[in-house]
Amino acid sequence: MSTAAKVTLGASIAFCCGSIYGVHYIQRYEQELLRQGLIKDDERRLKKEQQRNNERELMEQQALHAELLKTQTVSTLPSNEPISQDDTQT
Image (cartoon, rainbow, N blue to C red; front, side, top):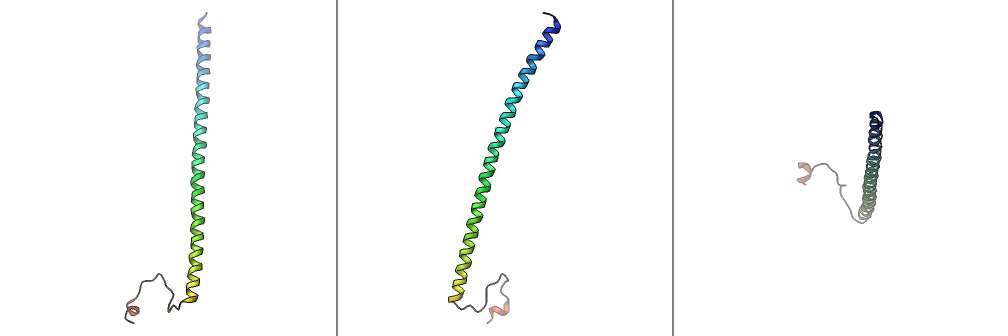
């Protein structure tokens, strides 16, 4: 066997092994991306579900607040402002 034939055979074997390794590497990489996509989808789904639960609870609290305002007399509506000294002296 000539030297040129040996070099060609060696290069062909190296190219074949490199191609096989590359294909397996790409498959593992894509599989990991798909797995990460599923995890992200689950997280998004849980966040949306939690947001819907929060919105439903807010609506229930607002309805309850409205019902309580109908049955109770309130001199002033609550606010986020701190109580001033004038309000505490009365």
